[in-house]
Length: 195
Image (cartoon, rainbow, N blue to C red; front, side, top):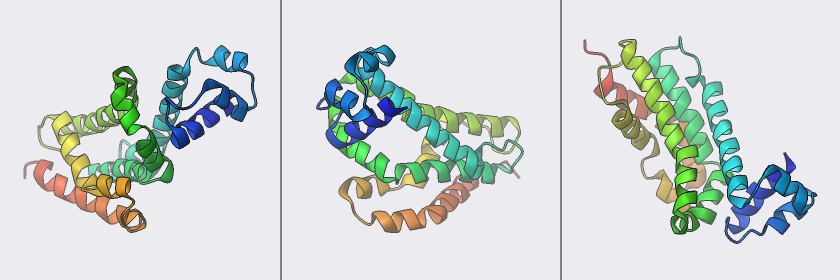
C-alpha cells in the first residue's frame, strides 16, 4: 500500500514525530482525507507499518526454515535466527532504530506499541518454538521466555552496538550464518535433551 510505503520511508528518514501527515499523503500521492480514511492518526499508521515489517520478519524466518515443524530443532532455530538477524542487519532496520529510538523513549505509548508488535512478538514467537520443542522432548524443560532471551543474546552479541555506530556492518552481515549456527550450537549444549 502506497500510504504505508510512504509513511515508513519518511519515518525512517525523519522520525515519527517530525513527519507531518501532509508529507506522507503527498509522497503516497493521496489526499489527507484519503489517508485519514485508512489511518485515523499517525500513531495508527506507525502501528500498521510496524505490523507489516513484523510480517516480513516472520516470512523471512519461515522461508529460512523456522516454519517447518518437522525439521530438527537445530534447523528450526537456525532458520528463525537467520531470518531475524538478516532483518536486524538490514539497512531499513538499522535506519529505523537510528531514526526513532530516542523518539520512542519520549512517547511511552508508541514505544510500548512498537515493542509489543516487533521485539515482543519476536520473543513470543521464539519462546513458542522453544516451548513446542520442550513438549516434543527435543529440548530439556526450561523457562521458554528466558531461553529465548539467552538464544537471542547468542545470535546478537555486540552487533547492535556495531550497527548503531556503523562499525563493521558488512563484515557482520557476511558472518551471520556462522554467528547463528554457533549460537544455536551453544544453546543446544545448554538446553539440549538430557542424554
